[in-house]
Length: 219
Image (cartoon, rainbow, N blue to C red):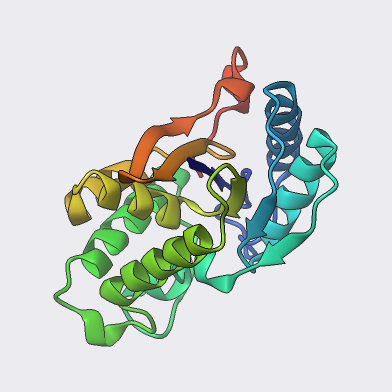
């Protein structure tokens, strides 16, 4: 039985000009995750990360916290969708334009729903079906190279994590939309693969951040 742990990156810089970097809290979340995985005896044979800076920073902090001596493989197929172009539904983005935090969140969620609806695919650099295929291919590629008793840890984003979870329970786009809104920064989703196929075992585990409500973030 192969084990895949999908990790959402630590808190990034939501609302800032450059979202793609961890906040100080995101760095702490990632270190705590690494320490927790080490305490649980997780010793991965394979570590994969997306190509975004927040993926690299999360991986570095978690690997250091866990004390793992393992090569890290970069696979851009684990990258998040392009949230900037998705915000407007066009190839141009005007950013948040001084919106409040709640307004920013509402705008993001409405824009993502529009992107995932399938009614405007030609307006995006990457349509939702293309995103789905990219992530599904990344999973298949990872499992093909993973031994029957090996563990892989993948550092990625909430979108890919949620699509893997939704697809494994046959939930489709509606499940993806709901799950993607509640993925905790540095949360861990566990997938098992063996003779009976690939199954979702747990979603969004963030026990390493508890009891510390100030450590739990979603953006």
